[in-house]
Image 1 (cartoon, rainbow, N blue to C red):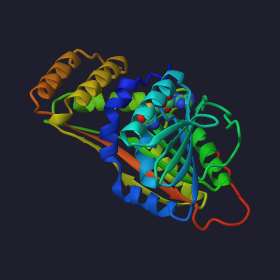
Image 2: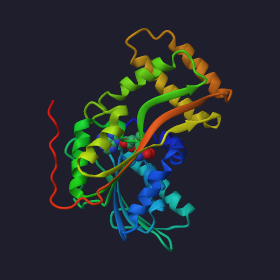
Image 3: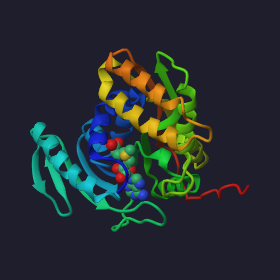
Image 4: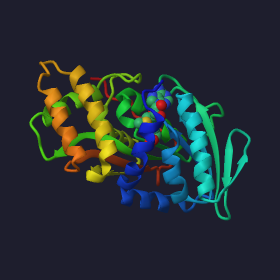
Length: 302
Ligand SMILES: C[S@@+](CC[C@H](N)C(=O)[O-])C[C@H]1O[C@@H](n2cnc3c(N)ncnc32)[C@H](O)[C@@H]1O
């Protein structure tokens, strides 16, 4: 349905966790301290990787609404989350609208929501979150969509934590002729419509930071790149396959060089001689100090 398989999300989860920006994770922990109970809204949650990383970091009492339009990923996520809680010796109970995981110090209540975020979406209960979060989602959305989201966060007075947004940088080692042509096609594909309007692709993290800044947020934008080594052969191969296919489809010129490029890259990965850098950014924006009536600047008309 969404084009994101649970097996792909499983493959990237440990790499994402290791790549997240430590300074921003620490800033989020500090921001969390004054709140007794957090209400978190996770957009494009997939199987719940963002929850699995952030919930233990934030600790205490939390209510999560996990939103995705793909019911298969949500179902896979429910099983995955139960296993995750069991591995942490947390007690699982059925809660009002989902699951609750409990340990001596922490209680996480989870509410999965099958919701399409395209267009004029709304939350069934309309309760404002304290924290709006997402991971590996932002490159899919368009600028008008992001403007609406930023304005909504401002109205909620919610903090914003958006992790692992792709920035267009792809660097293979060793370098091969063809790398740049593949990267250029990939980034052209990034800007195509994924349902939200023309996608921001690599421009998304900086655009979000600027939008939130204009709304009075205190914004931190920090790198969280994937640095894949020879031990990450499976994910390198998955990326190679995906990008080769995109390059084949998005070439304006002939792609007779592409099979040879793909073959040589595959051989390097198999021989454990390949390294790959993929640029990402994390954004943490705090409405700290925003007070008084909400005023949302209108986007400039070009
Ligand atoms: C790259 S995955 C990231 C999943 C998860 N956040 C993670 O870090 O593993 C992007 C997610 O966005 C979801 N998504 C894409 N378009 C959506 C839409 N229109 N409405 C809701 N979710 C959407 C996909 O189903 C997928 O789970």
